[in-house]
Image 1 (cartoon, rainbow, N blue to C red):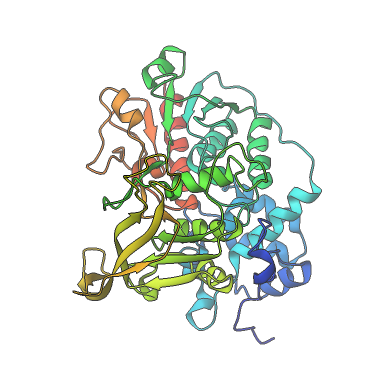
Image 2 (cartoon, rainbow, N blue to C red):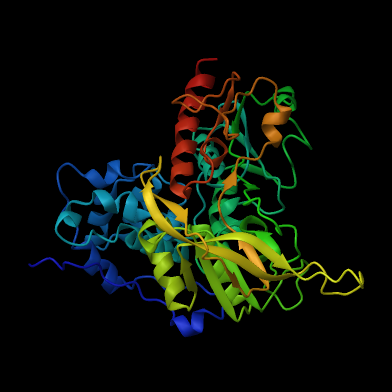
Length: 469
């Protein structure tokens, strides 16, 4: 039978409809589509796709189960190594990881691994109510700082081995970046809640509204009887451009903007948190977070949304799928442009003027690409005399985040690098005995699956460390 050279398309909402709602854009494969896509897998001997997955999911194994119509069996194969299959099927950059290694991809489009993972995970969640069996206690206690993907993965792996695990989360809802950073239309929060509930069923205790470094310190966790600590506190400190006007009303970090919308439900008619809706919005940056912020602004009623990015489309770091969806929804890409000032309304004659201090525009300069920089991408160079003003009412800065400095500033002897990331060895061990770290707290903002991989590595190291005690 001839192999279909292209992936089977993912059904999705019409762009003109979805741009005005927060429902999930991708609708998921049908059984017919899943079976057809699974037949494209060559089940090759060396299985390079597994090496491309940061948590080493047995990809040919679960796809073989799909071919047999054993969908629950396929899910169980994934669950052997992944704590968040329904999440990964939606937000992992498979095109640069497992699918990038797919043998079929040498001649044709690679197998739609992420789409198949999502299909069997959603089917399992829809049909299975059975709760996992709690393993017998091994008598050891471990504390996890942060309930994002690295923390949840580390917690799940340790709980399965009988550890008493407590996860401490600073916000009022568990899930970390999965709930405050990724919009509902990409990752429904009910899916995250189900994954968290599964960990609770395993015996994981999740304590919200606890800020490690303020409410409790790492040292106090050890005093409370925890024998090891995993720090997965993420990268929640937003970066700004340090240009004039960033203090005007209507200038947000993408971190704040998305948190207000995703976690604090600012999209509701009477939200408990303020957020600007409507008008013209400029989002600065070209990554997935920039796409999320721009598409969220559109759904919150913006009449026009710009992506302002200093390089070209070829250098855009966001996932191709997210860029494609943004273009379909009408996001206006202002490429090879860089903001140099945010303009605002000031009326010194009347300080009570309600317009005082609000954004009125963004001054930009056109760029051209020069020689490659340290990252290998061509360096953007300003074009002299090309300044212009973009008429906008709000600006969202999405140029990255750094690890939160709170834990390092309150934990004696914890070594960090010049960017604020916690320094670890290959097993996730920090400069403090019994203290491990992983995910964005170490690397800065990265992918969900890479954070999960770090959580798995640390869990194995913690188990070895405490087993030897």
